[in-house]
Image 1 (cartoon, rainbow, N blue to C red):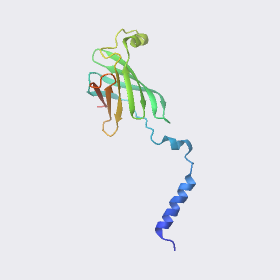
Image 2 (image 1 turned 90 degrees about the vertical axis):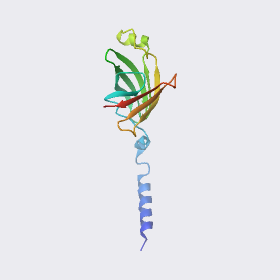
Image 3 (image 1 turned 135 degrees about the vertical axis):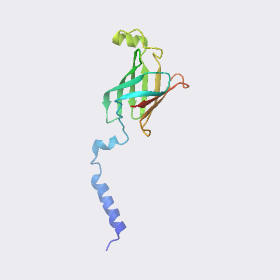
Image 4 (image 1 turned 30 degrees about the horizontal axis):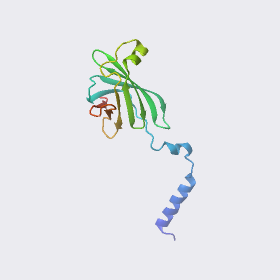
Length: 148
């Protein structure tokens, strides 16, 4: 009679051999992450004062990448931002005044026009936080909290 450990080992080896490469392309998905950016984001820390609304486009779920179109809505104005994400890494930037004017004819994109931030999604926090640094001035940070 075979011992229980040797039977379990044989079963595990048989399972591993039988699976082999049966995952195909799905095996490459391990480690990719596409966050649900929908909903509003509130400023926890930073210069902006409005609520941020994210729209996601050009998502490649096999790579965990995509583009972001963002509105910062303040009581008096709306500012436009664009960005990208690559798994948990996020980069966003306020459109320059010229970029804004080319889109909707509005001359100014506010005091942060042209400012860029880069950072990470903190998915271990609930609600999720987006922690970023100004790419030109690392003393300036922006932390956004998803939802309310």
